[in-house]
Image (tube, rainbow, N blue to C red; front, top):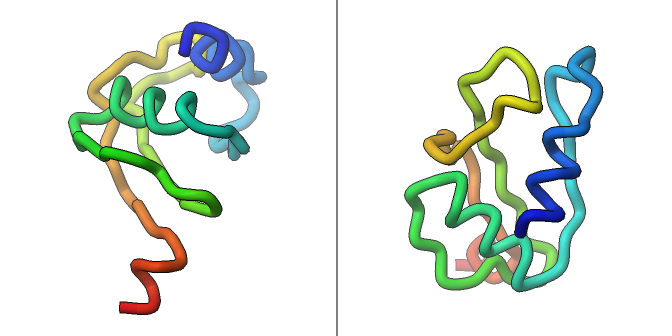
Length: 77
């Protein structure tokens, strides 16, 4: 988890949005640390969007807002 947070904090501040591609358990751990969502598992090809209220990536912290959590099986329902 520390490695993922470190990568996010190193994103160029010129970028106002970013997309990460991660494997488990890192993606699920990252989401649950940054958002109070209690997601048991982000499945393969799952998509999560989080909004952070900060001026630079280096300032991200928990308390982000979960905007989207989708995955293929959910879309079939």
